[in-house]
Length: 206
Ligand code: FE
Image (cartoon, rainbow, N blue to C red; front, side, top):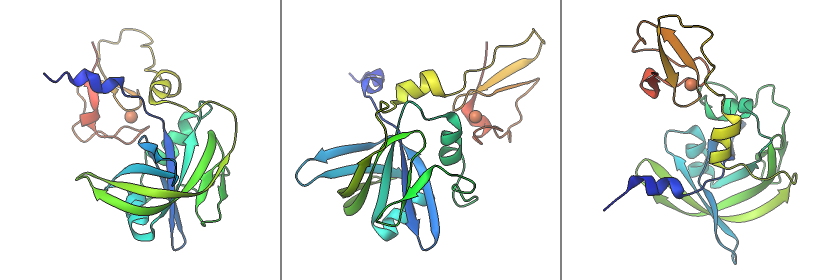
């Protein structure tokens, strides 16, 4: 038997994974950072190949992980998770970052620690690449507990707003961010104004 729900019993943290290539700083949200050995001190991170940060790490062999805390706000997820570094400078107008000795920005807002990694090996996982890295530098930023994916779902992600009054219209909710679209039909090419995900990530509400 294979009860897929068993997978939900796994817990995950949330992290901002940053890289720098040339003069370009970029970063993305990941949930798959873990320490795998203590001596040497090594971590792994799996990164979606469609992310620009993936390519930057593959080419430079360097990255920094900033550990998101329970103080992280949704704007941070929107900035680093819901847009592409190919379209925008994710650090434009952002004051919550410092530059580490490896030249890469770490995030000081809504985080409790950061660590820099030097890639020693990578495994092609199909949709993702798994990077294994030596931890070079690391520091603590606050004592606020690390955020978990479950905490994010319960306390940080915006809740679907309650309907003001029955309008007779149908409603679709964005499964990614909770935005609600109201109308007679959800256009096929609809893009969520908050998280930029397509109509296929919406589901009709009761
Ligand atoms: Fe959305």
